[in-house]
Image (cartoon, rainbow, N blue to C red; front, side, top):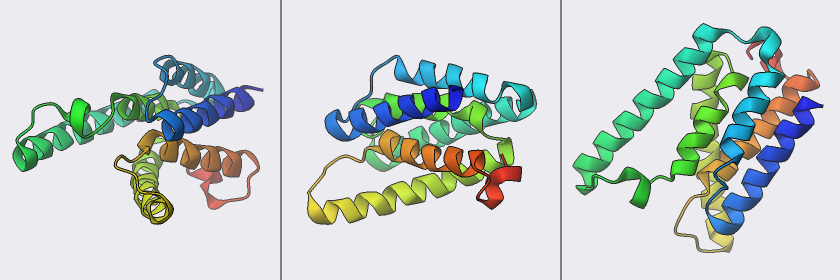
Amino acid sequence: MILIAVIAVLVTIIYQDFRYREIWWFTPPLLFIGGFAYRWYILNWQHFAFNFLFIGIMIGLLMIYVRFRFGSNNLFKEYFGLGDVLLLFAITPLFSFPFFIYFFTCGTIISLIGHLVLTLFKEQKTIPYAGYISACTIAFLLLVHYEISPFVYAA
């Protein structure tokens, strides 16, 4: 039942991000609570903390890159949405640390490829990163839940 609620929140995020290029402020906390409840019995606090630290480091490096590359101090206003960052923090309970790095990397690559393909059909200035990562998260959760992938033991 919790899995259905988590997937419902992820589908809502996908719709909002593709339609409006923003997500409601309360969806990341709902997703975080749902992910926490879904993985409570196997949640490793050390992995959870490392996931948070990894995201913090990645955002810090992105801020430094934007500062030097574009001369802008405001990462979240012009280049990367705050909802995207909140979503990354919200999905941290769903993954072990080593697999989170793998998921983050593959999810970002899939997001870029998906965006390039969709841009062939309709010109878009922004990338709905939260929507793409939400779709990847749904795929991961379903593969793990139905035990039809090698990810069963990695999560």
